[in-house]
Amino acid sequence: EDKVVQSPLSLVVHEGDTVTLNCSYEVTNFRSLLWYKQEKKAPTFLFMLTSSGIEKKSGRLSSILDKKELFSILNITATQTGDSAIYLCAVGPQTGANNLFFGTGTRLTVIP
Amino acid sequence: KAGVTQTPRYLIKTRGQQVTLSCSPISGHRSVSWYQQTPGQGLQFLFEYFSETQRNKGNFPGRFSGRQFSNSRSEMNVSTLELGDSALYLCASTRTSERNEQFFGPGTRLTVL
Image (tube, rainbow over all chains, first blue to last red; front, side):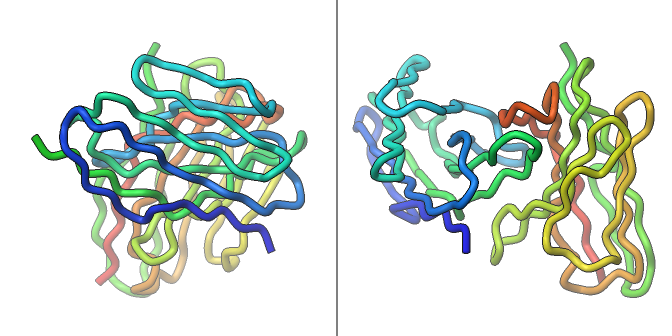
């Protein structure tokens, strides 16, 4: 059975801290791993990773994928209160399908 | 470029009724996927449409159905509503069915009483 596991389930940090969110997966049909940020409603796309070892960066956020060990991490440096959200990890299948398989998410709370 | 739009944003129905939700993808996007999000189960895939054809279906009962029109807009229908259908229904679009990065709409919050 396909599985995407995120850890920790929740995290409370102070502004300025650096956080690392984890995502491990066991899927039979892997093409890509995606990270989303969900605040109130719609998940917002952050990164898509398809190759091992290549770090993707966007401002204070970065992510890397390890296809051998089947995990990914999302790093957020110098956290701000606006980073408070649920961070979702999803696995995308090989060609011919577009059904993302999501983890249950990590709830990040950043306090001033 | 306008994002994914969904209507209505909120809906209250009673058990046994049926409901139709609508989704307009980002201009130029031809693949539309639907997801159900609940506190207990998280985000779960319902189905995907591409070029008016259902390409994939998740593990949901036949009461959940959908369709896609020639302009890529999509609708999903839930018949004989049950209390457990209360959820946030999210639609996501992507340019083709060969790409995984999906862009989500704001969702429709369905409450079944």
